[in-house]
Image (cartoon, rainbow, N blue to C red):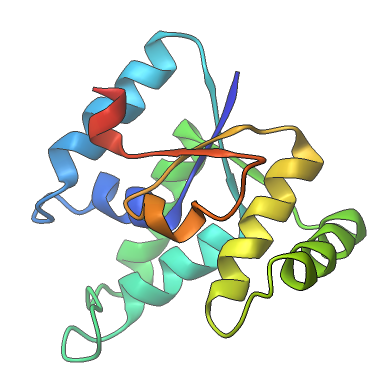
Length: 147
């Protein structure tokens, strides 16, 4: 089964000092071991880059260099397939934001759900399952749910 890995889990996976690091590592190992295909999106890669290279002094930034962030992204790409955006995802996203009256930053979550629907992915590993509860089309789980 394909499983989408959200940005928060990607970050926890590669940052050993993060309190959720061990759960993220265990979840990724178990999912791979049971034969699930791990997937993330170009949106997640962009969000990952943003947080990693953002200064520590600015809202949750990790303050990594461009070189370190590029290395961490290469690691993720070896473990997790990155799927591209498409016109079909955009059309599904528009449908979802209208159907669910999505406002503000929650539009980013709707875009992930749209891609999941288009790519036939039912399960999302996320640190923030409550952000996705409005979408009956998918099942959000936390890393600790996997372990």
